[in-house]
Length: 620
Ligand SMILES: Nc1ncnc2c1ncn2[C@@H]1O[C@H](COP(=O)(O)OP(=O)(O)OP(=O)(O)O)[C@@H](O)[C@H]1O
Ligand SMILES: NC(=O)CC[C@H](N)C(=O)O
Image 1 (cartoon, rainbow, N blue to C red):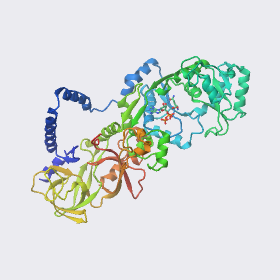
Image 2 (cartoon, rainbow, N blue to C red):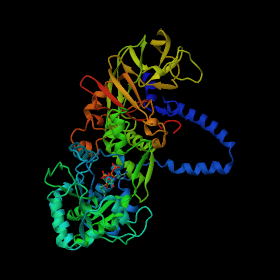
Image 3 (cartoon, rainbow, N blue to C red):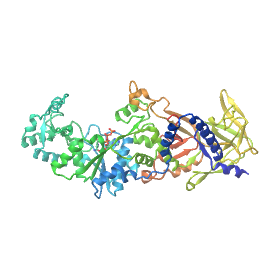
Image 4 (spheres, helix red, strand yellow):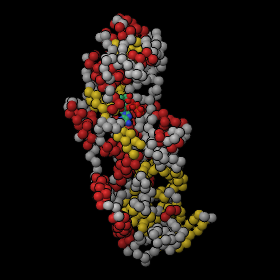
């Protein structure tokens, strides 16, 4: 008979509206009831509007797994390949090591590494380290780490600074070709030469007429420390008549009073982005140099320099940036949040740096799936946080095991119960995940929110005289009394309800002796979709409830096995890197949320982060 009851629990389903686990039949009944109500409401609307709404809903039904390589097989990236269908494809991901990467960079990583991988080629991780003032060792390490975590292996890690000698030679060559000159003009003069505020006529300064010998002497003097910053710079002699400002004799080299973290005090002059990037691409035999659309105008100067020097010419093409709304990504703003202690650090799970997303427990594969789903075009993509969460949720749904976790435990003493061993599957849908055994004890702990002191007709969980199912336990229980300390219920007394009908609802529980854990539930860090538009600035938009802590949550013993068997899922960079970090211990806490271990965990104390809720928040 016990079997007859537990059999049903294997097929329990989540009622998304109430958060309860209920039998298939009960869920069907509830859905029908709600559908009827909704239909009645809808009937009031006029027919065309209703039809449009239905039509708009259709695509959402498509819940299949996205094809992981779609973004390369079709659309913009496919066109780019067709423009230059060469083998082997060679690409590069070229971050400046001046901060932690964010979700937008994940797109750049996926595009560059993915494009090469898809075409059987190679991708370099190139540190674009030509601004010694802003660069720090910790960023190099963090960037390398994140690329590996996303599952990509650079064919080599290179540095623009590896090429400082070669770039210097190319600069002298450009001077000898009469295509560069040393200029001593200040900002105001340069502005005037470029037409000024009124966009008037453009003209060159007298330095542009210097002889090659003079320019060489001056450039070497710059190199040898004769000039202080801003006293001299090397300019490319492009085409001042051109409508594109990127052709208005851009700087190629400037004097900087800074030690480079790799070349030390060797250089007093450093090449600019416009001089460095296209040449480094050329030196590395990059076939497709993919970057974001703010570089569209730079394409002419990119091509001009390589052509002028007669070197191998890569092809630059530009795609739209990925922006997430409802958060801030700028380094300066995140630094403010960190310094003013609004968040726990650059890797705080409420941020959208990649180290933060990783710490929160988001699997690397889910990020790649997100980028792939959005696709790549030349248009910028502005995405709401909820859309990102939705992809993660779908990904976790099919890849992580389930456990029982109680956030706010309250003991229930089941007077006629005996200790039992109960087998729990790790996943109701994927038998290959296996199962584990947990102890069922006379006293179990349930969520405080699953008990009501006063029953009502619309309530289906535990209340005095009311019966509820405990997930996988042979008999449902009925509350008979409860004890209080002041306003707070401290214990519920219950008995097995062996005679009653099958319960309508099942709730999760944990046994006596279960491990106490701290759970951190993260909500949006900002109240609005556009924190930057808040009066007085983005700090005024901070959500005071962005982190809720449950310090005395309890987790069932299956957690130990989930931890031992991590990473969940075993994919992308985590397993290749070895074991995966604590954040790869992921699971679905039944009826609660998707969870991962936080890096604050110690041998004695487990801290868990909510990765995402089980369903989209109402109102979003
Ligand atoms: N939001 C984004 N979406 C897509 N690609 C991006 C985004 N931000 C940067 N990238 C790309 O990543 C690569 C390395 O970026 P780098 O760190 O040099 O950029 P950045 O523009 O300085 O970034 P940010 O200023 O946003 O921190 C570049 O090719 C850049 O175009
Ligand atoms: N061409 C590019 O991809 C630009 C990379 C460069 N590090 C930048 O964002 O400034």
